Structures are given as C-alpha cells and as structure tokens.
Amino acid sequence: MKGKGNGDNMSKKMHAVKNRLYAKYGKRCEVCGKKFKANGLTGHHICPKSHGGEITEDNILIACYQCHFEVIHNLEYDSEEYWDLINKSLEHRKESDVACP
Image 1 (tube, rainbow, N blue to C red):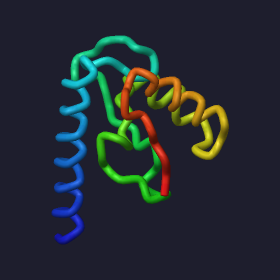
Image 2: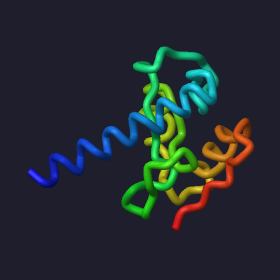
Image 3: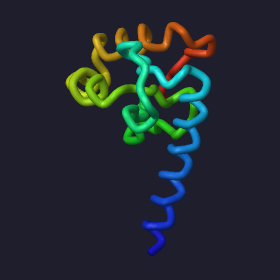
Image 4: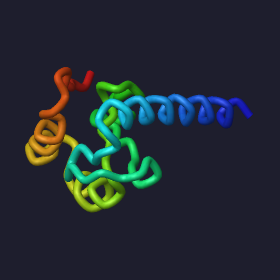
C-alpha cells in the first residue's frame, strides 16, 4: 500500500503544479499556443523523472495531448531537436532556465 499512497501524493502534486501553470499561462499549450480547457492539457516533464526531473513549475511544460504525444514523445530526450522545441516553447516564460541534473 505504500506505493499507492506515494503515487497519490505525486498525482496531487502534479495536479497542483499544472493548475498553477494553467492559471499563469492562460490554459494554452506551450508548444502550439492553442487555448484549451484544462482537461485538454497535460503536463510534460521537461527533464524526465528517469534523469532526476521533479514535479516543479520549472520542469513541467503544459502541452495539449496532440503536441504531447505526436510531437514531444517522437523526439529523443537528449536530441538537439528536443531541446530546441523545449526552448522555443518556453520563450514566453521569464524564468525559462531549465536544466537537468
């Protein structure tokens, strides 16, 4: 049961971070710029959990499902194309200095 509780806490944390980002950036996909209802958006770990990425506003990019699954997930995390897309998507953020551990 420990794992389930930890997953619930992670899910609650992700939900809280996504809601803050939705409010901050107007419920827009940070990749394509289109506006969506909150249930049409998801959070993408810029630096994956497997590489030490955490659930923080600095490490979560808000994306519509189409951009998340058809664009972002088709790029290798360590590729130049991935980081070009991430940097372009975060240009509107003042604090867009994302780095992985």
